[in-house]
Image 1 (spheres, each protein chain N blue to C red):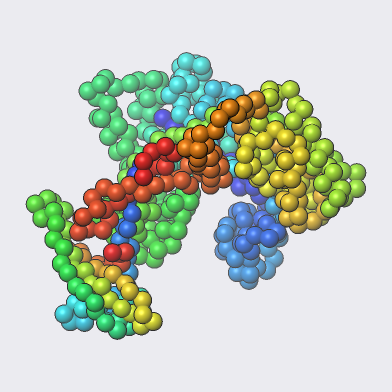
Image 2 (cartoon, each protein chain N blue to C red; image 1 turned 90 degrees about the vertical axis):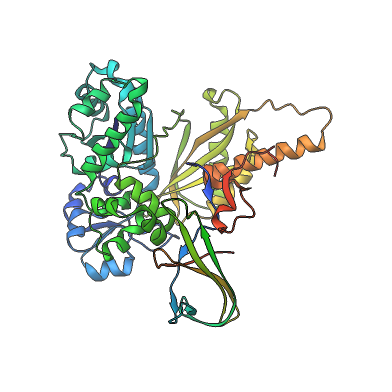
Length: 81
Length: 423
């Protein structure tokens, strides 16, 4: 093993948001409810600040999914909360 | 400096055996019986006609109806490749090999053995191999492999010119200059790799899956990949992307050579094609012969390789890792015999070879077993077994780093598991 490895690393995910940035579909599955949303801002004092808008949603079929929108790069990722 | 020895299409060449003329035609290795139906290595002519190694059999035949399929010979490949590595080790090289046909070693320590120059080392390697091979020399393993793929059969490709020779001559920067020399080596490797296609990443299992998406995104060369911001590559491709990005920038993991091992093998020719009970009897004889060899020196066996030559052509090979290191022939037979049921056809020769030895058989048990020590010993044994089967990364543990972090990936990491540690 080359060294310690991080757990829960974000993975790219396909999200279709509405105009306000609220997820409408995750990986092709329609979002039925938004359970929670929160903002994480960290390391703003460094060259690589972290700004993420997290969404915990329930997709059709009843699956709980946590996704976030990287406000710096604009990419969407999925992550286990 | 790392030297890469490349024997292109070794598996196909071994499988063709005496029919080497076949290699001029569109030929591919047939899928192994009972495994995924993908073709193995393909000849240059088949490549021209659009067939690639790893392609589904149906697609390969649709693209090239005249494709000839050759039964694979995994046992023959393992035997030939073991011979090649042993010959490299005979010139003093500490060899790492990730797959048959591709081996790397560090040339730095061999200078005084072979005339004091890189040329001397390469000449010794060629003389030891006694077969045409492509040689690449570069600061990293990945770069050396790229160089070997571009080398001509009789002329090695050396990346870095005088800098390479200085390193091979044993030149070591002073303490204050070490980071500068490392940076120079990385820069030399990155500059060499920059114009080369990203398809080179398919040589590494961890990055092979990235080639197709990278090409689809218009990233054609390793230089283009290296120029992308690291964070964006990580966002898009995750850990494999980071590995590919580091390789493209001339960085690589250090060499991890194998410990030169002993070869202990027993083979039996069967007068008539055998299966079932006859094979079990032959297996019993092989186990007895193997355990009777003087070279075993009382050691137990941790892992063995059972191989067979099939009547209908080709060979078959199966690795058996024992739950506990063994020297008892009956228990060994019980552990290996079920594997005979996996044989895809009757065999006319079987062999049994030791892959790894265990501790000596004189394993004296303590007078009083302490439950905690016993549990710990069992756990250690279990970890050893799992690692023997699935590699060093098979037993990991979760280490909590910052449990209250608002960023999930900072809360815990995976680190190698060592029995006896808390948690």
